[in-house]
Amino acid sequence: MTSSTLQAGAASPAAADAALEKRAYSKVFWRLVPFLMLCYVIAYLDRVNVGFAKLQMGQDLGFSETVFGLGAGIFFLGYFLFEVPSNLLLNRVGARVWIARIMITWGLLSACFMFVKTPTSFYILRFLLGLAEAGFYPGVILYLTHWYPAHRRARIIAVFMSAIPVAGIFGNPLSGWIMDSFHGVSAMSGWQWMFLIEAIPAVLIGVAVLLYLDNGIAQARWLSAEEKALLQREVAKDAAHGAKGPHSVAGVFRDARIWWMAFIYFAFVMGQYALTFWLPTLVKATGVQGNLNIGLLSAIPFLCAIVAMNFFGRSADRRQERRWHLIVPAMMGAVGFTVAASYTQNTAVSLAFLSLAAAGVLTCAPLFWSLPTAFLTGTAAAAGIAAINSVGNLAGFVSPYLIGYLKDLTGSTQIGMYVLAGALVLGAIGVWFTPKQLVNR
Image 1 (tube, rainbow, N blue to C red):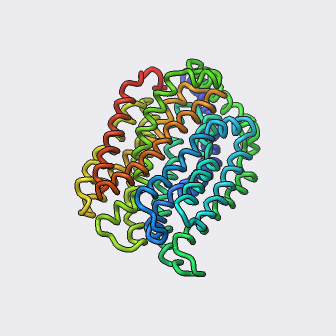
Image 2 (image 1 turned 120 degrees about the vertical axis):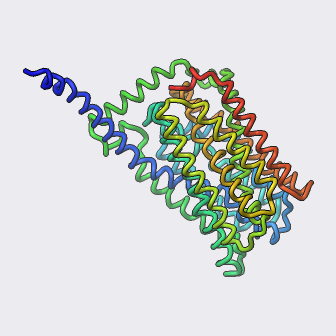
Image 3 (image 1 turned 30 degrees about the vertical axis):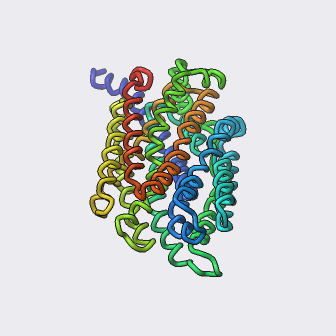
């Protein structure tokens, strides 16, 4: 037997294993990720379409910028209160039932916004929407850890979170078109029709989740026995590496690293939600007229964000490096907000740097989750991811309210955008001080 024959024989099992692994992960990706993206597009659209509704709603109901900012942000108080319990329940009853419950509930509540008349009713519905949706995003992050090991997650989470800019690309023009086209139909304003029409997909997809989603690898009838075994080995191996993290819910809340992660995420979310809630207003302030035109131009920053998110996600997984892949986009966001704030009367310049800001801040979110999921496993992962996300998402309350308050106070969004840039710089500093041996794997 020749040496080349021996080498070929030795190489063939490795080649077969590589082919099996490629096939298994390809199946998982195409079965889960596009569907979960669709769910998140709908979730994000129903969460932030209030930013577009504001263009008519504020005039119709007489809401000030502060009232709108508080209402937009109060969603995250309900989100904060129920997020950890929601994720623990998802871990107990399974993703299929719990994600379906979340989507159907928030769809019904989102439709109820068409009946808003007063600031109080606006605040109550936004709070209840936060309660209903709590657990969806961290639940999906947790769900993906059941299928993917840490060294594959940055790219997968980046693809999943591309749903945010996709929601902006399609949702902003759609919202503008609905508000212009349906205004006055059946004696209802365009913003009322927008809330009703955009709520329907959440209920329908929620029902589809019950029929389509599997709770884990073992329940996936579309995988062969060999593919299941390989995926389970990869996840088990990853869990063994995660032994350096806490192993109980109580341990999560005593772990200083969890609160450090929450601080970093808070800084990044400050920029993310200020951008998604206020982008239509910022574009309109440059002199753009017409809701559809505002929607079309508002889609441009989200197109840039999709490219940046997936570029940085692939690069982080390929290089097995996390910190600089977060620091660079955070600083891109800070520069984008700073320059855009200085050119609010120039549509082209403002839009270019809002695009840079969007590329930066929306890239930070998916890459951030590769940090805590590198040391969290099991039940601790359910509680830890939810705790970080709930505390971090309080920035979703702070930033819209702060921007609205400062705009009422000064008549401009400029100061608020400088504050957002500062928050992103603080987040980048926090990542820099995170030990690389904790998260780079």
